Amino acid sequence: MKIAVYPGSFDPITNGHLDIIERAAAIFDQVIVAVSVNAAKSPLFSMDERVELIGKALASFNNVKVDKFTGLTVDFVTAQGAQVIIRGLRAISDFDNEFQMAVTNKKVQPNVETLFMMAKTDYSFLSSSLIKEIAKYGGCVKGFVPDLVELKLHEKFANSST
Image 1 (tube, rainbow, N blue to C red):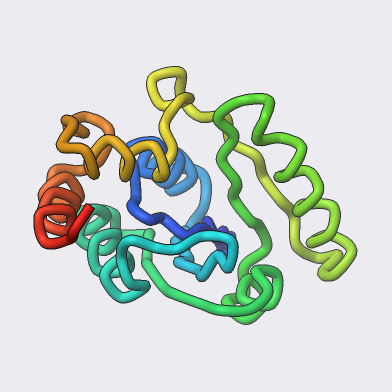
Image 2: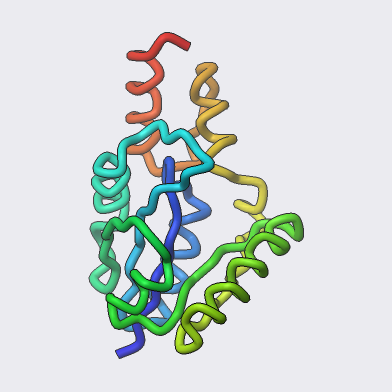
C-alpha cells in the first residue's frame, strides 16, 4: 500500500490545500493530512479545531484521513508506514524553503521521498495567512476556503477584539 503524508499547519485549510489533497488521493492508496505545530506561527485555530475542520472538509474522501503530530515530520511519516511527503508549491518563492526541507528530510530518513505538487493557477496566490488577513477585516473569502471554514473564520473574528 502506497501511503503519503501531507503535513502542514493548515490554519485554516484552503481550497488550494484541498486541490493538492484531491490530486494526491488519486495517486496514492492513502493520504494522511497531518496537522502540525509551526513554532514560527501563532495559530488562529487550535490544533483540534483544525483537525475537525479538515475532517469535515474531507468527509467524502474514503482514502484520506486526518491526524495531528508534533516533532519531526519524517518521524511521523515513518511511524505511519508512509513512503512519501507531499508538498505543495505555489510560486518559485516557495521552492527554496521546500527544497531545503526535502534535502534535510532525505538526510534524516533516506527511505522517505518528497513529492512536490504545483498548485493550480487558480490557487497559486492563496495562503492561509492571506485568508486570515482578509477575514479579519471582514473581507469575503468565499471560493478561497470551504464554506464551513468561511463560517468559522467569521465566527472567530466576530468573537475577537481585532
